[in-house]
Image (tube, rainbow, N blue to C red; front, side, top):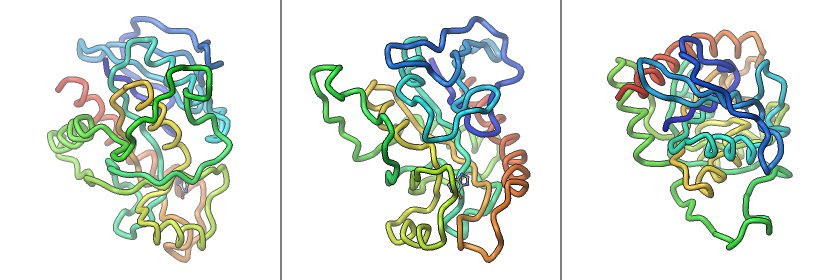
Length: 243
Ligand code: HPA
């Protein structure tokens, strides 16, 4: 079953026929929210709001392990993480949708593995290609079917937040090859892999990253870009469900 982790701007999925709710309590602690089991056009889907509903958890306080665990327990096999990002590549203007194919992790002090001694045997997951090729292609195809222009590939730099980056930090990320920057892409992707869930990201560019333009980054600008891109993202996700 497909699961969606809604990021900033996607705290609920209107239009779902609600089948049920799963508790937010897990052996790894409390998830951001209970998992909603819904049906859209006759297809089952699971949904969780990454920051809680209403939005309450900053990126570094999210219990990513509990969220992934709750989705797996509810029957998820494929997970799409939706997230707002800053564009490092100047071609990735606000409003652009991207399906990244790589990431670099700059986060710290987050519970980033299930294999911390409690779950055995220890598995060193292969993370060479952090996103599921099949699910990435399904997202891109859903975008094509909807007539949307979705960028195929990008390197997601996962930063700690909640502050935005300095211009020098973004220059460093650019030198590392990152084309996008966000705060929630990790450890979500690695935890999904540890649970053998197919996982891919749908990233919505909501601002040029720090120093990419001379302008200050404002929440008003981010919110305006998010609103527009989210309409497209919702359409894409609804189509993904029926294909
Ligand atoms: N940096 C990090 N995370 C973000 C940004 C950004 O510029 N925009 C949206 N999420």
